Image 1 (cartoon, rainbow, N blue to C red):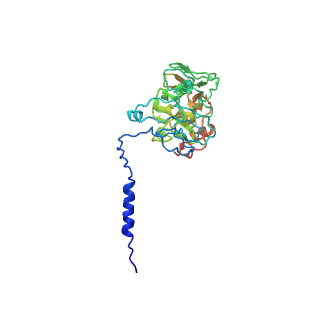
Image 2 (tube, helix red, strand yellow; image 1 turned 30 degrees about the vertical axis):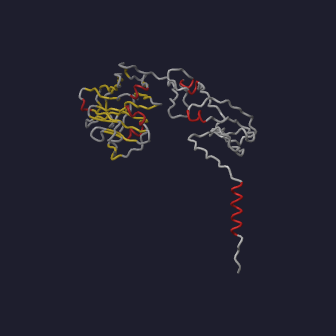
Image 3 (cartoon, one colour; image 1 turned 120 degrees about the horizontal axis):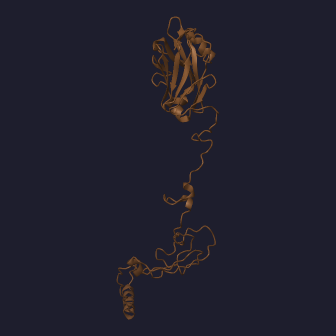
Length: 330
């Protein structure tokens, strides 16, 4: 294998060529400490996501966009933090697929319509009271004039055969209680009781010495004592109807003569005559019905008497069990 002897000659020729044509040295450019955002950059590819030159790119050489184009900011303006307002040019959009986030001016504040104003002092149509929906449970029921006589607070009235009915107002029917007491020469000769039907169709009665509170002893509506009976009107909506009766305590079942008084919370007093005479065990005195939240009282003036079971059945209270004709099973 032979060795090349021309390598020193070739090396020397390349050195002589380099010395004959020296390459001028280019001075290194100093490193700039600032960002020159106004320097022209390569034109970006046109797309539908036009940010309006917000990052300082020059979009003047790009293809015309159908959206707003903003001129670039100078570096001095950028670092000063308060760039001067630059004129903007807007071209009509050719489609609705652009996502330009900077081509719209902030909307000027507008005055809200009067119906949505939150000014509590300024009158508006929204603050006017609106009529309740007739199907709402808060709607006040229509009042029907029953055409019955009423009684004023503090008034005294005698229940006669020609004027046996009184209608209490809604206030009189819902405030306090109604109390009934007997006024006779010997109060121990007669006691009062109430047989009633509640709004959920339960029938029962209260009578001194037998059942003094009802229908629920924990939340009673009716109370019966030796001095009289009382009806709690604060629970008037739980009552449907009732019957006030008198039971003589004499062994002969003789009813003493006297008067039964019915008083309201407002001081109104209704008086029912108690006719003296023999009975069969009980005497019906006053019936009461709740009509649209109002209590309607009627003095029965019933000339007939009967056992307590017969009197209750005669006035429609037939859902009560009995031990004997004089004693209910409660």
